[in-house]
Image: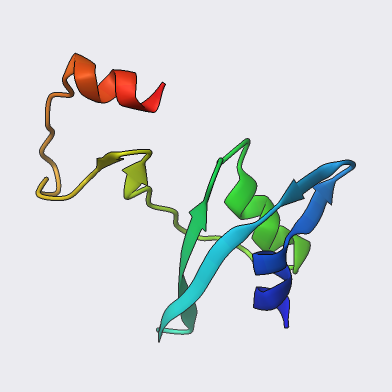
Length: 90
């Protein structure tokens, strides 16, 4: 029921409504793993969504920002971003 509420949209603060595409991925060592996709991530929004249901977020990892993704980038490495890439997310 809570997942459906988040998908339809919930209020976090006065006048601030947020919707998220959310899916349960795994349960390992007593912790749940979720995939959360936001259209616009503002001010610790994922943490506040889970806090609304009295759930604590232990780790967050951003896999994409607009069209920029971490695809094909190994942990600890980086990739230079071209001006064209930056202009596409502004």
